[in-house]
Amino acid sequence: MNNLIHPRFSLCGIKYDNDLVLFKEKLTSLFKTNEEKNYVDDICDFISQWIDDNPHILCHSSGSTGVPKDILLPKTTMINSARKTGEFYGLGEGSKTLLCLPVQYIAGRMMIVRAMTLGWEMDIKLPDALSLENSGKIYDFVAVVPLQLYKGIKCLSFYKTILVGGGAVSLSFIEELATSDIKSSIYISYGMTETASHVAIRELYPHHSNYYTAVKNVSFSTNDDDCLVINAPDLNPLPLTTNDVVKLIDSHNFEWIGRRDYVINSGGIKIHPEESEKILSSIITSRYIICGEKDETLGERQILIIEGERDDYPTLDDFMDSHFDRIHRPKKTYYIKSFPLTATGKINRIELLKMIK
Image 1 (cartoon, helix red, strand yellow):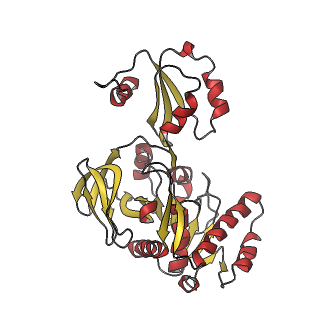
Image 2 (cartoon, helix red, strand yellow):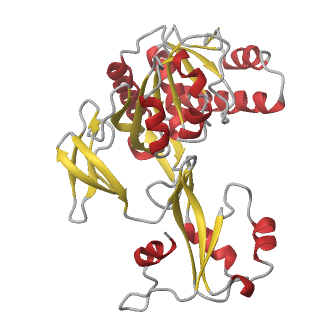
Image 3 (cartoon, one colour):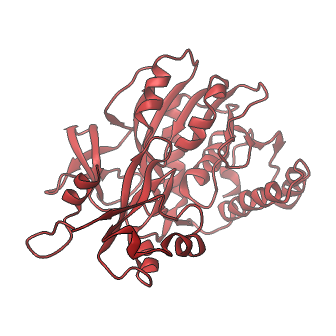
C-alpha cells in the first residue's frame, strides 16, 4: 500500500518518506503533553495498518446502527470514499486540512485516508471541544462533531469548508448561523462505518437545506418500515438497510425523520439505553426506562424515567455518581406515578415521553 500514499501527504509539515519510524519520531517531537503524544501514537498506528499488506482495515462501529461491532473494511472502499469527498468539495493535492477527531472510529480514520490518498497537507489537534480555536491559519477543510462546532463558532471563518457528523445540530445554533457573517460553507454528513464515512450531504450554511443529497455513485430507497436503504456498489457490494426512518424525495435525496431504535446520540457519543438500564437494575425495583431527550448543546441527552416517587429512591443520585462516568450518567431523572402501557403490557414509550413534556 506504500505506493498509494500521495507524495504531497504531510502531517504538521512533516512529509511521509516511507520510513514510518522516523516519521513518527519527527511528528512526536512537535508535541509536549502525553495526551498529544498518545494521539500521535494512535495516528501512526493507523498509518502502520494502512501500509501493511492486509487489504482490509479492522474498524470499530460507534453503535449508530445498533450494538457496536467490528467491521472489516476493504482499503479500496476507503480509497473510493476518500476520492468522493475530494471530488465533492474540490479538495485536491496540497489542500490545507485539520484532523481533530479520534482515530479509533471511521470519521477520524477517513480524514487520514483522504489526506494520504489525495495528498493533503494536514495539521492535527487534540479531539476536544476547543479543537477549532485558531491562531490565524486558514484551512480548506475540517471534519468535526457538533460540540466542536458550537464551541468554535468565533473561529469558523478560518475553515473554508466544515463537515459536521456524529449527531444533530441544534435549531438554535442554525438560527444563530443564519444571522452571522461567517465565511465558511458548513455541511452535515450522513454515513456510517459500513460505508466508510458519509454517503450523503446536507448543506447547513450559508444555504440551509432539509434534504440530504447522495454523493457520487450512491442512490437510496426505503423498506416497508420507511427505513433508508443505501445503494453504494463501490463502497458496499450489497444494499445496506439502516434503522433511520426517512422521507424519500427521490433516489438521490431524502429527509431524515428519526431513529427506529432507541440509541441516544449525545454530543456525538452513542449511548445504548440497555447498558444503562442493566446498571440501574441493582437499585431500582419499579418500572423504569432510559431514553433520549432533546438537548440544545448535545443534540440529545440521556434521561431516566421511574415509575414512583422521588422519596422511593433517596440514594439514587449517589449510586449513579459512583456507577456512571460523566458521559454515560443520566442527565435528568423524572418520576411518573403510573406508566402508560401498551395492549401487551409493555411500557408505551411514546405516551410516556408525551407525559414528561
